[in-house]
Structures are given as structure tokens and as C-alpha cells.
Length: 67
Image (cartoon, rainbow, N blue to C red):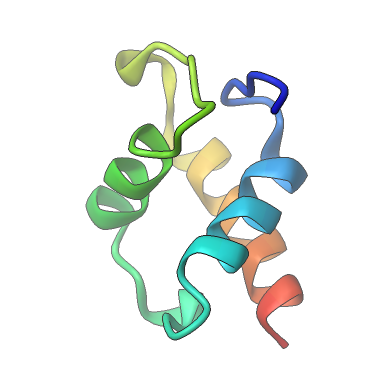
């Protein structure tokens, strides 16, 4: 599995959707989203390098994948 970083927003969303199919991403808080991303097996990004804009983009892609 290829390593991913914060800018791989679509790939992160796809992996989150696969790992947490029961979770509606519309209602996830940014701190919870951040933790779930950092816990992905192939995530190698710096935990301190995310921001609200990145998390929002990931969340929007995840909502699209979820629907």
C-alpha cells in the first residue's frame, strides 16, 4: 500500500470510508477526523502539518464517498 500524506485528500477519504463504513462523516469533529487520519496504516504525514482547510477537504471527499 502506497504511503499517503495530508495532500492526498481523496485517497485519505477513500481509505476512511473503507475503514469506517458505519461512520457518517458529516457529523465527525475535526479532532476525531485528524486522529482517524493519523491512525491509518499507511499515513506518514506529520501530525502537526494539517489545518482546517485540509481537514475540510478530506471530510467533503469522504461525504461524497459515503453517499
